[in-house]
Image 1 (cartoon, rainbow, N blue to C red):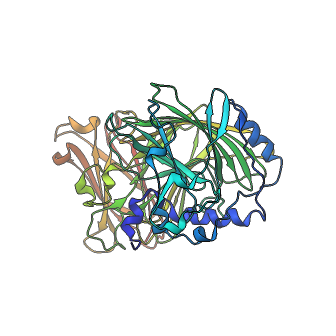
Image 2 (cartoon, rainbow, N blue to C red):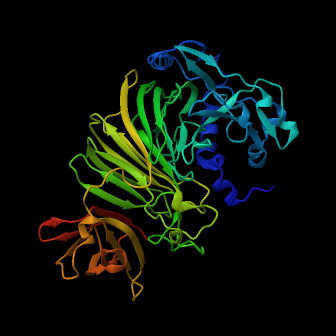
Image 3 (cartoon, one colour):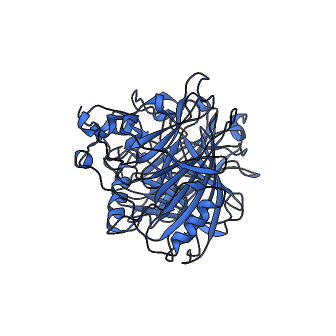
Length: 514
């Protein structure tokens, strides 16, 4: 079977394909030889992974083994997809528990050998590899070498009580993804980011996992992970609760080997190909194609911002300075089939992912990196928290946060929000016509005679013809205006829907470039 664009996008193995390829190159160049096993069976408690990461940080980085038998060495995507874990071999299957775990093979872009352990009664036991745990479309890929695993999938009866759906997967670098009830996979998260958007981005690796065996009746599972890279080690504890909203409670502790100036905490990675605000260079029959359509932010001072995403011609980097943020996330607000018109990819069912910091994260910025992409295969959007101060070599840094894999913002704020941003040419073809639709409780019951106005600003160029009017088709309101940029090559725009008492909506922020 040949590899098609849609096959790649639909497959979990296709997530972040360009990033995984980059990670593989970074890992293989970082060390000449693989180390002996770092994680070993034995006693295990809540401090085990932290102690291991702290000890590793005192020594130089050694990459895990990427050596594969010759039959698997040049595996392509179709071959990789044809190696399937047998459901009857899942960890904890038939034991009356709410969770089962299936393991993923090495090969294709996923070459590093990742250690897997089951934790029970304070003891960690290695999950043994056996080639007969898998079926093979290509029989020559069945080798008897003890090659180990590349990652794993967590299954839970999230949609109906008699079927164990896949609800989360950890695969490639420090990437993972999850879904809530009724959703399809979309954007991904990472354990840590370093130098994102720079020429030499480093992709840290989760090189070992410990899966705590849940007790009967438990609806949460605990996963521990060991992070490693040339510049940092780390210990992660994920408490995962699937449901109508799937929650990850994340406790992370980082130990830099070297100073890290551009660290990324709670990084999110998604895809934005085109939408109503950005479609001038895309010839496609659908109205939109994206995992996420905007970056939502709730600042430490309580201000709420919405930044629609773009597929730029050149890399774009935006930083939103803040102190102790209340949260941020890459969100998918389009939830109707008509928003995308795609029968295969179900973009309207992709998760939104909101990060809720726990504790004081201090000064820093929410960074947004937008990369150009010619298609919907590559992840081209990254958002994360960047502490203002560098992470010092030899230090210990703890970040705790809650991840909401959800359909919408985890809680209502009472403000109207941007339902959609549409941008096109003005009648004279010299400017841009911008249309902002606002919905929500703050505007739903306002009469058509309400006195509202739009606060629209631009860092360059000229704003003309601001119009505010009801939009009865969405029980909301609409602001339209023209941007005439003149000779400007970059314009930062912002907008609010207001009445005489003050703001009624979140703040719309946008970067226009030719």
